[in-house]
Image (cartoon, rainbow, N blue to C red; front, top):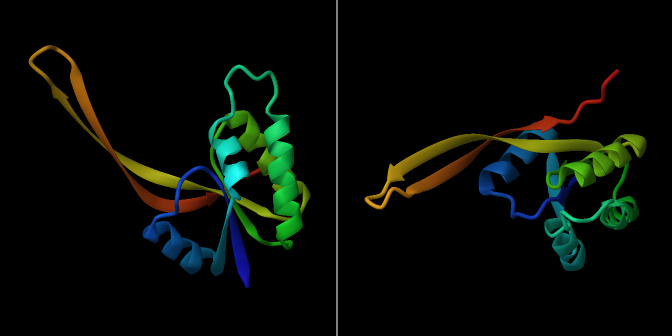
Length: 131
């Protein structure tokens, strides 16, 4: 049984769930608990360090994961780097979702631009280490 821990602030789409199952054999998804999800989604840009948030999330992952589990990590760049590094150090496989983006722009009569963006999951990609 393979798990995927979800360190991001969204819900997985049906396409993402199917891809995780097909590509990695994942059959269980673990979302961040409410308090950690809220902290991950609202890391203050004024903070000098994001360690306070990353440490709590790393501890949650450590307590609930097994070596070889996947961890989907997307969010604040600094916190993402810390969690990805934690995953590598603890035998976990960090991944992120790639998307195709479609943008429609419409210029309104008053000169403002109305933009609609659509994102579609393409695949999961494993984070890599520089060697």
